[in-house]
Amino acid sequence: MNILLLGSGGREHALAWKMAASPLLTKLWCAPGNAGIAQEAECVALDITDHAAVIAFCKANGIDLVMVGPEAPLAAGIVDDLAAAGIKAFGPSKAASQLESSKGFTKDLCKAANIPTAAYERFRDADAAKAYIRNQGAPIVVKADGLAAGKGVVVAMTVAEAEAAIDMMLGGGFGAAGAEAVVEEFLEGEEASFFVLCDGDHALPLVAAQDHKRAFDGDQGPNTGGMGAYSPAPVMTDAMIARTMDEIITPTLRAMKAKGMPYKGVLFAGLMITKNGPKLIEYNARFGDPETQVLMMRMMSDLVPALQASVDGQLNNFDLRWYPEPALTVVMAAKGYPGDYAKGTLIEGLGEAGKVEGVEIFHAGTKSDGGKILANGGRVLNVTATGATVSEAQRRAYEAVDRIKWPEGFCRRDIGWQAIAREKQK
Ligand code: AMP
Ligand code: GLY
Image 1 (cartoon, rainbow, N blue to C red):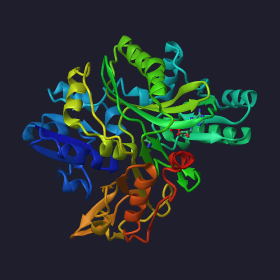
Image 2: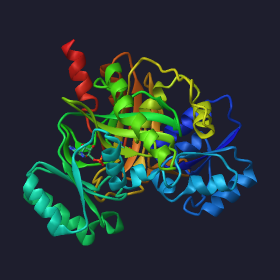
Image 3: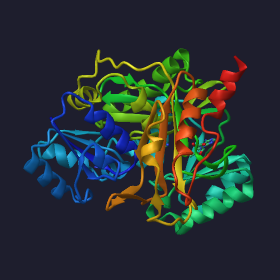
């Protein structure tokens, strides 16, 4: 099979690494890719917002499957356009990807299907939103309706903070993505990232992970795209997975099908495990980043047939096998991320770092320049390791991190702390 992967992050490097190991693969391309993905795939400088150009590339190169990594092409309808051109693509249609691209759509669907989620209201008028906030009190959560690159959420600890977030969003702070705001109840509990492969009718659960969204140790500092992750997620016991499937995932697939928008691809549920059970924080229509890096390390089965089964509606009775060992990934980011940061700084020592037992280094934002690896983004490297325990995976990952010479980078030193605290209690 010839496969084209779209994207350029650490998630895509992990997917490329896993697909490259498939006996079904003839050739893998990636657009646009990065310096790490180039070790697994031929990177092509295709503009993925130009769907006609992507279709022409697929036809010229006999592409059998397109794997879409990020959300933007999904929300732009690339899967619909490829399908119309007779090209199979993994991921939801434009209509179905509203589960990520419109928080209001998802909240309304949850209400109609009785799916547990935070209580909410949608607002276009700032005065009405503020009156609601004052009435509810803090803590309270304010979200931009549309895609805001993971930055459209303010968890406000005071009413004043929530009102300021309303002024910023409805005042145009996120452009069109913030023309409508969702104000919702603050949920208390432990978060988990839960993934299912879907084929329109059936859902196959993957292993769960936990992400660390805050920039600094101790879960302090601003929210980011994710500073590290590990799998399994101790809160996602078999019983909690069964409840999540029954109460959240299955009703969602049923509702999407009834709306004429059957959901195919991977559905990523951001969950809050509360004292009353799982509640949906948000859906994403794609794999998580950096969660995918740990998922791919733990996946024993071939990924490619699972992707095909999703596209072809064949997931019923499909099975995936997983390594029981935990995996953990540490994100190395450019100093300043998630704010302003420098690009083009030199990274050395990756060869030595990659020799640590159980370690794989996925590139998130790098480019190569005459044999040198340069930083080319905010999140730059994902130092990923497996181990007999989360503690061992963490020790290996940081041993590799310490071999990387990149003075302009930083990482958290406490990835996996919740799971390690549990291991120490045993
Ligand atoms: P989201 O982009 O919707 O995943 O939100 C980003 C982060 O904000 C989540 O990972 C949570 O940590 C937090 N968050 C979002 N919604 C809520 C909520 N209703 N209650 C508490 N925390 C939330
Ligand atoms: N790590 C969270 C996300 O991919 O949205």
